[in-house]
Length: 218
Image (cartoon, rainbow, N blue to C red):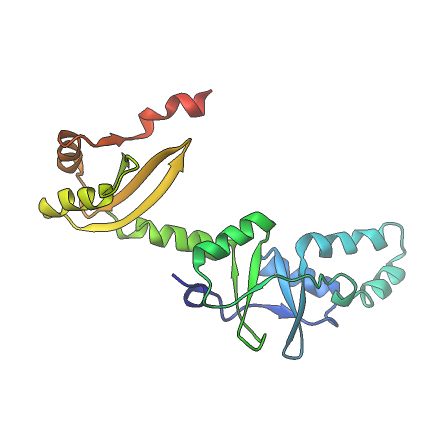
């Protein structure tokens, strides 16, 4: 999956001349953690909720009302904008974008074309939406987790067993926990017990919450 297929195309931006108090309201009203800053068609940076909130109380703590209103009418995004913005092209793999956001602790990424023009935006909420979609949660069915060996053909075997039993695979995922390889398969049935039984008969280790309770209790 590519970022360009999941990015937001209709999103809120501000300009360097936007008042900080107005940026704060946009962040609050739209439940955002950051805003991209454009000067005309040029992407010049971003502002975070923390930057905006920090700019407001730092200048209003001991002011008269008329002084407060005057200063609030003067503080603009230009005063708090961050220009070290990280951008990605729409061809970026969605998981690579998620990893970049994680490693850099970013709440979102600007998506630009080859000319550097802003064409989209992808944030943490969208990444969570993609995770839910890729795991097939909203399509129903049942989830089976197999602790799989690190050897060639394991996924092929699992898929073959399920397919031969005439069940449809909705989605698959691969996770690691303490060097243990977990294959998550969502199948189109409300009762996965026949599949689980068949997998175990063929030597596959099916695991569930009870296998990990000792870890989250300690």
